[in-house]
Length: 119
Image 1 (spheres, rainbow, N blue to C red):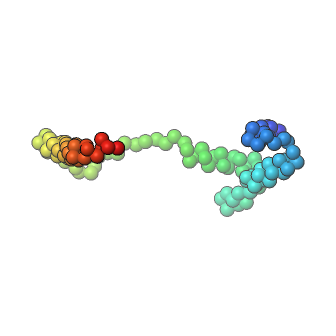
Image 2 (image 1 turned 45 degrees about the vertical axis):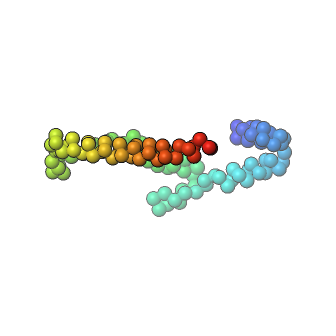
Image 3 (image 1 turned 180 degrees about the vertical axis):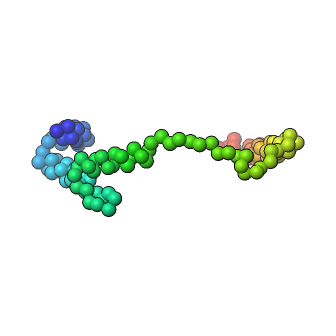
């Protein structure tokens, strides 16, 4: 019953239609088309609505359950730590790239400033 009321309210709001026979036929056809009346589960055909509901619910629960995270042990890779000098060198390279990009954009912007005024 709730389904009909909700659908009729939506229809009335959208098109101003009343609860007509045509409206009920359309709603019933949509309901039948969207209904899951049979699924295959572990090689067997399941037609009981309660079983279908339980199977789908359990599948989604296992799919979206909270998973335990395990930390990856990076020491097992055999990587060496950066020295302080290597760390500073990499940091400087990154900063230089960022500064060069910023300066490039500033120069382009300055060169074409006249065009910006005319826009």
